[in-house]
Image (tube, rainbow, N blue to C red):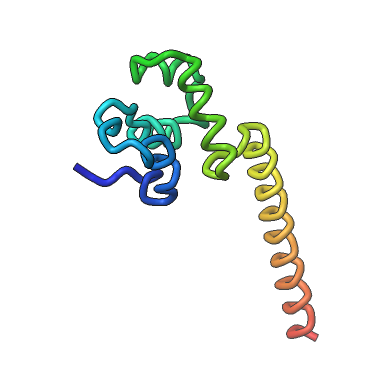
Length: 111
C-alpha cells in the first residue's frame, strides 16, 4: 500500500488530536485516505459525489475540504478556472509574439 500523499506533505494535520492521549489513537478517525481522494477528485466532482464514493457524510467531506484549503493543499474551483484562463491567454500571447518575431527576423534576413 502506498503512503498517503497529503500525509506525506503535511503530517501535522493528522497528529494534532491524539498527541496527548496514546490510547486514543486506535479510536481516532483516519482522514489520510479521504484527503487523498478529495485532493484527486475535488475539481472534477461535487461534494455529494465524493461523499457518495467514500460512503461518508457530506458535512465531513465539506470539513476536510475546508481544512485542505486552509493548509493551501486545494484552491477554490473558481480561482483554478481563472488561473487556467489566464494561463491560456498568456500562452496565446506568447505564440503571437513568437510569430511576430519570426516574421520580423525573416524581413531582416531578406533585406
